Image 1: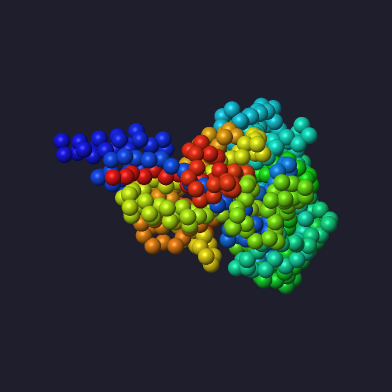
Image 2: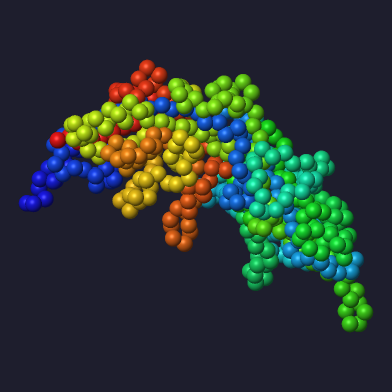
Length: 519
């Protein structure tokens, strides 16, 4: 019976409001409130140029993209991967008369694993070449996860190319930008057509079903054996192979890119890439018999090396280029009609709650005793310009934007109310042109209206926050996927006729949505 008045009050608020009351807002509900209101206020929204660059060295790259993608709104984006190479063992002994048989680069792109995506091919009459052993070969093929067009001229093929790097890439503590130009040797170390799939291979012996080969799911391509014979094997005993510092200045690295200018982007974990050198040398037995023996040695492309995601853009003639200037400051005075938001160095967006809105809410708080129950920023996809089948972003990065610079702390809602079932972003109708995003800022707005916070603005980027795998907690504002998030979207921006004013609930301009109670 004691709880009955509060239950009735909650029902009144919910039934009086058109908007959604989130778990956070319900905890802030004033128990003496009688009526609930759902209102929208126009925000000042504007594009923030990042000059098509972003820090894209190993410290930012849990994943990297490869490929090229062009569309009419944002233009062309082409991404290459550049990395140092290190020896598995320094001052190596390759034995007597070492000669390379083959050199293989292995990449492990992210792939689709749903059952209906997998294709399995079995060869019951396979002859394993090493010893001509009768065997069974099972190849399982998976489509690589793609962003962009899944077909290029009716096909799904890229030409992947590998080249030697001619510039010293520096140390792992150096910061590298995505727009860094690196000199490459024009002579290819390898080239192979990539059809958009990768596979695993298992070979079992017919006689006893024992495994002769078990190759993990990957993309493999042969590199120039003669180059590695001369560059590495022939340098046995030379100073350039005796320590890491000498080696990375001698063999400075490799670049992995695609030849084509359009298609899609795919991702891979940089530390999963590797190069294996397969060679034979002479082994002399105690009786003097000389046998050519198979040996292999690995070149390390993983952690400890400098990695660089090189991202190049061509915005010529696009709406993006017309709206986002790399030289002009952000239009945070009057705002922009459309917001061209893109990951990987593309534009961010800024949002400002006009002072007139805060002044009005402060007066309502003081004079009418309103209690803010829920506050959300709502952004609508611009369906007239971004109406396509490309996957929309499923997360956003949010930080405060003050008078001096962007804050690197999480907004108060993410920290103070993390245990209250708080969710930063809610996405609605994401597969349609009518998609809209809501950013929960209830605590932030209450601090502005009911407290003394001077923050009025926010900066939004495309990407997801990275999580501590041990604790499940977020690593920090600066630890995120922004450097390799391929997504882009066009949002509705400022309502120039009503900036800072209350607007209709069906407006699609960038807006502040409030649910508040009044005594």
